[in-house]
Each structure stands twice: as C-alpha cells, then as structure tokens.
Amino acid sequence: MDVILASASPRRKELLGYVVPHFDIIPADVDETLPKGISADNSAEFLAVKKAEHVSALHPESIVIGSDTVVIVDGEILGKPADEEDAYRMLKMLSGKVHRVVTGVCISNGEKKRSFSESTKVEFYPLSDEEIRAYIATGDPMDKAGAYGIQGEGCILIKGIEGDFFTVMGLPAARLKRELASFAESIEKGLL
Image 1 (tube, helix red, strand yellow):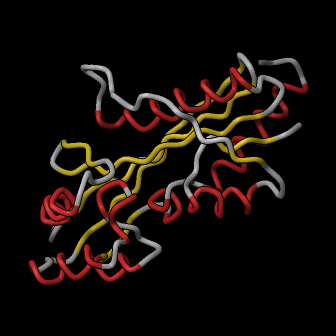
Image 2 (image 1 turned 30 degrees about the vertical axis):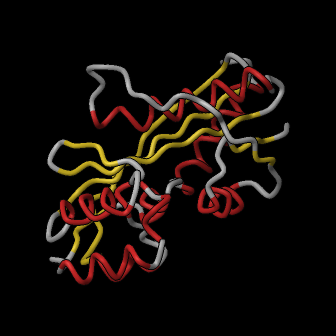
C-alpha cells in the first residue's frame, strides 16, 4: 500500500525515511485554527488528524501520515513565529525554562484512522538578548514551532531533554514505526 506524508517539512521527510523506504509527499492545505476550549496537550494531535483526514479524503487507497508539533510553555502554545519579533518573544519566554514539545501523529486509510501524541521536556539555558538576536539572524527559527530547531543551530540553546529527541524534531519515528505496523496489521485482519 502506498504511503503519503501530509507535510512539507524537510525534517518529517527525513525521519519518515527511516520508517518506510518509499512514500509520496502531499502537504495538507488546512486551516490550522484550533477550536475554542481544546487543551494545549491535545492541539497537536487535533491538527495531525485534520491534516491526515484532508489528504486521506483525496487518496483513500493510501496510508496517510499527518503530523503537527507544538511547543507549550507556561500553558501557552507556541506555533511557528509570524516574524522576527515574534521569534524573539518566544525565545525570551523559553529562556532558562523547561517547556514541553508535543507532536501529534495520525495514520489514516480512508475512513480508518489511529492517532497518538508524544511529549518531550526540553530545558533551555538562560539566553541573553544578544544570543537570541544572533540565533534569529541565522533564519533557523522562522519555520519551526517555538522558534527553534533542536537539530540545527538551535542545539546551542538547549541544556537538556527528557524524552524522545525525534518528537522535538517533529516526528516520533520509533513509535510511528510500531504504530504503523500495528495499523497495517489491523487493516489486514479486518479489525479496523
């Protein structure tokens, strides 16, 4: 069965390549506005399901993988920064604190679907304004939730992590591999 990644993220593309050898990329063009009252913890999985369902409706014969990542600090969801000042605001909020990165994933095949979330704690070193501005000047934070990438130049901001590194990168590859195998087996046995 064909596999489709419903994301244009180069990081997710790289990580999914470790899970399945061949797949297509069809980014989901969906409204990412969260409904009122949704918890921060459920927001990434909600968006992952929305993305997977959108692409799966167009390609019901394929297995579609949707994913979304949010950074949560002091109860606030940090998505991708709108501009450099927004990136500065986010990085200032994260400076010297522990925050959580939640990545939601949805595996879909037509009407059948399974979703899950993984959460990892990340601690930042205290950052000076100069450090924050220098990092923003690299351009690295602009397309990433929370305005940083753990796998890029943002690695110099991080004091430690507790949990799955790849969840912070945007796709919990080890769990996805197991969930995908279980999902495919359930379809084969007619359990879904």
